Length: 447
Image: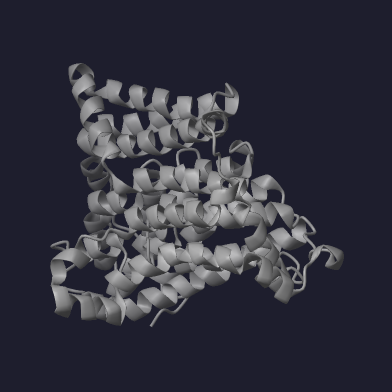
């Protein structure tokens, strides 16, 4: 067996052992498991560890997630989150479980813009996790919803995973963005519908009721008290207007493409939201060094836990690539010759296992071509094969024990991430394999 496959098995076993059995902190678990993984490089282990870490440290998603952690702390400190929740409850608090439905739909909307699972969990969870907990969802259920929903952006075009796949030599002669855009949007709609059904299940299972009417402010009152807090979302709107749509086109014609291409929404959305939050809540921020030191001390544990988790999760993906995991799985899949549905199941399971420790884009980059060839040669349609592959890799955020969004959402909900493992596998990972198979086989139509 390839050393990369053995490394994958040992890495996953290490994470499970440390978190589930030894009850070690998540950050410590990811560091130790990463070092175990690097040990498979032998004498090159120090060089592999340094290169993987240095590359990951420069990844804008790592920066974005850490900024969103601080943003969540500022939301609470300034009281902005409470005023926003009052507005949301005045609109949707009368619907049983309304916060969960908003969280699910928000993940899809944010995923259409910023396709990464970690950024999605950090951004959407910063507002909806506190709201869900206040409206009756148990903490681990709120975290499960946010983590399970976080990967939908990988299926919504034009995601990086899709662009990587369409650019591969085996795929580009057969498909382009125009031919797969609509099928992928339909596939994403199937996924969103299923996620809404899961939300309904949680509402019924945990008897999440509508917010008590005595706790609801009239909409006009809630809006009058908190309308300024909605300006925070200009931090999302402004980068979007600059990078896509008619404003983007105008700016390109007026000042050229260079400045607009320099705007990375994964970086600038959290930065602008952070600045706006600080400005809107400046009265409630620390004004003395001692208060500021206490605020930093209170928020530091979250930075350490989430920062270490995301950094070392991305570093592990770099290490797996260097160890040749893609080639190993390609050799494993290359010799398969079976019924299309059986192949879809096998490819789905393999991609989901690899997408646990690796981000979806990295999984697509290493295994997308061989998965596409394997499926299309077995008779799966081109668009259906692409949709199935993207659905399988989109489980990156919902795949325990190594999915970074799990720990981001669990940190936001202040709950033990282990409590999310079983519901994530049962309600997201396994059903997404089934949905990928049904779409790949043409049973669920996308065109």
